[in-house]
Amino acid sequence: MTDLTKSAAMGEGGVGLLSGAESHAAALCSACAKGSLLTVEHLSIADVAGILATTTRLERMAAVERARLLTGRTIALLFYESSTRTRTSFELAAKSLGATTTLVSDKSSSIEKGESLKDTGLTLRALGAEAIVLRHPSSGAASLLARVTGLPVLNAGDGMHQHPSQALLDLRTILLRLGRDASTVDAHALDGVTVAIVGDILHSRVARSNAMLLPRLGARVVLCGPVEMLPEDALGLGAGIAIERDFDRALAQADVAMMLRIQKERLAGFDLDLAEYVARYQLSAQRLAAIAPHAAVLHPGPIIRGLEIAGEVADGAQSAIEQQVAQGLAVRRALLARALGVQA
Ligand code: MLT
Image (cartoon, rainbow, N blue to C red; front, side, top):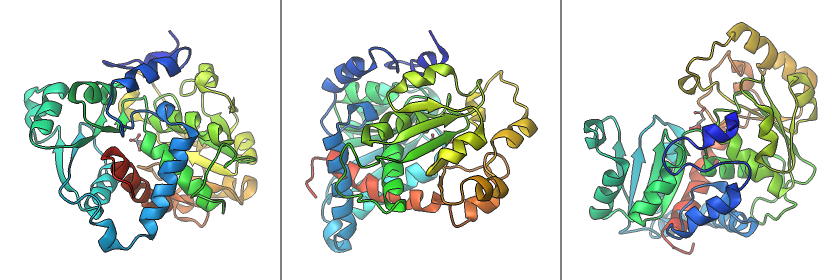
């Protein structure tokens, strides 16, 4: 088993990424409630177009009208890993649609006493939750929860596997940033666009979801990082993906540079020379100005200033990082309405 397949198969219900992944994913989904979002593999182009069209409609709707859409509905947020952006945006999105939310985290619940994911899910369902937003350190946890509860589950990040709502909000950010139509997308929506994804690809569910989604809309994805963080088999994630080890060469091709944090929590036993990493892969102001003065800079956060990205770049005019956060709220509204079967 290669590094990438191994990492994606961790945990119960994990799915492989290379051969057979599509059929396995489809089999998992057939047992899941409609409206679940477990992996970008489950989304057709029509689904993506529908989600982005709903996002636009909800954005244009008056706040009072929007707040009636999920009145009386209950959504549980179940978080086994820390989160700022994802958790807050799902919560605010649910509230802005009028839903009642409850947050359960591993730090302050019976999970600390050893309660299983299955029992926690069944408890939330018994308390009236109609959908669950789950973040979990094991790949495949969202599929497992969807199967055992029968509820729509929105995967808010499962181990090193998938972060599908992040890929959708990144897609919308890129479309808006490049002045393209974000309401009516098709398989050519990103034709001619090159997205460089740079850094710790191996441990990043964000990289994996974006690399699997963006080429289906016409983008070329160039993955860039050291071999320890970017094994060659990443090419097997799908068509439209290339590997470029040299950051300057990757950046020179990029309309969008998506920088990634080094996932220290998933790097056990790996000795990284940080000074060398910074020299080779940091997006510094000088590098950006010299090589890609027009590229949009994305980062899913949390950003580590001075490591993968210089503070001036994060705060600079080319940065779309705050726009990504705002798009998280907008896109997650549409995903929650979809999960609960509400037409918006
Ligand atoms: C994630 O949850 O995967 C984040 O958005 C990216 C990160 O943790 O670096």
